[in-house]
Image (tube, rainbow, N blue to C red; front, side, top):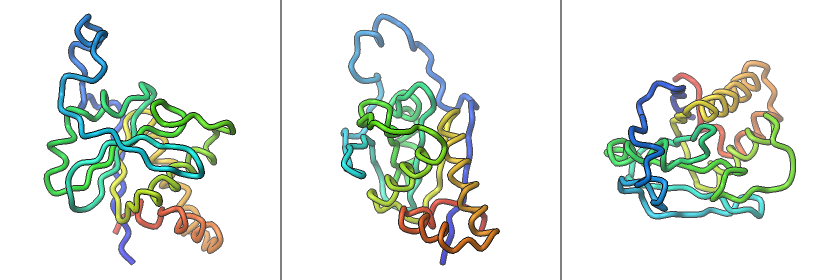
Length: 171
């Protein structure tokens, strides 16, 4: 079984936001770059918002605490979509995704990310996170690695049900 490569970006400025906070951007409903169409997938009864463009191996982009996949990833989606299926999601709990009642601890966030990957049929993915998204991607990967190292078949099966078997580790 092929296991994808795990990537973590945290605060490197690759998606810098010159001009954020200007009157022009404050009045705009969408950033000045060309975002893919808004899409939603239903996960455990709630809607998760995402942008998707391109075909090929899945590249899943997880936003930071700005809560905006468009602001953090919008300028690079087209470039990354050359040869990749790019999915930039709004983590559940960050609008325009639903904000479900319930916990927002590590376990819940990791489970929601896995369920979202599964609902999007994202296999053999590369996860890329910025700031909080980097933490979430790394935590997600760490949980799967730990389950594999410990031979915890039950935990591995839970990850596999959520689509996680495709989300990480080094080949």
